[in-house]
Structures are given as C-alpha cells and as structure tokens.
Length: 124
Image (tube, rainbow, N blue to C red; front, side, top):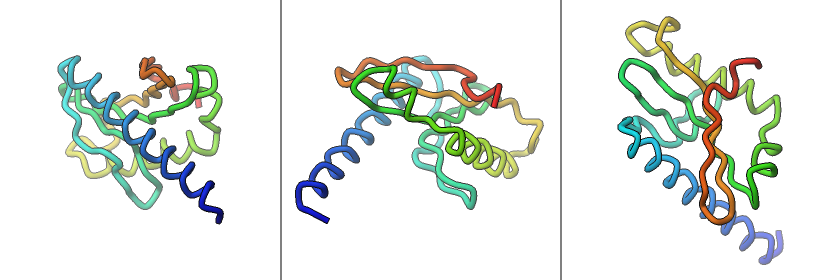
C-alpha cells in the first residue's frame, strides 16, 4: 500500500473517531448516557450504544463531505449487520429482546454539523 493511501486512511480513521466523539457529546448534552463506544460482538461493531432511561439506542455514525454523501454510505448489508449486533447486545440485557430499543444513524458533515436520523433502520 502506498504511503499516500496509508495517510489518507489514517486521516479518515481520525475523522471518523472525531465524528463519533461529537455525536457522543450530542447525545450526552440531550441528557442520555453513552454506555459503549465501538462495542464489538460476534455479529459486528456498533459505533455507539446510548441509554435513554430504559431504552437502548444503537447509533451508526457516518461522516462525509455532506449529509447526502454520508447517508448514501450506509449499505443494506451494513444495516443488517448492525441489527444483528444490536440483537446480540440486548441478549445480555435483563429484558432480553423485550428491551426498548431503536437504531439511529448520525450523519456528520465536513464542518461538524450533526443530523440524527432516529429509528432509521425500522423499515429494514
């Protein structure tokens, strides 16, 4: 891999981490608790797991130049993986699959604006 590709990859990874941090702060400022960052199970990784009372919110963070590009980067296969990982996570909760939950997608643009798509995966 070329040095230029490696540097671009590192920049993208750092930008992704910064976007996740900004989204975590967004949820915390709304009075919610960020329970996990980059939770990894057998089914895959979830960027953020947030608790709002009894409800668990699984958050996929997408960073791009603008909101449209960020939303286009979420593919059906990735949505299915996210849902499987969420199901795996709630399996360890006291109420199991009866735990109130939702799947949000947080879009972050190049200037750091955040747009939260609540319940974004309910139709998948």
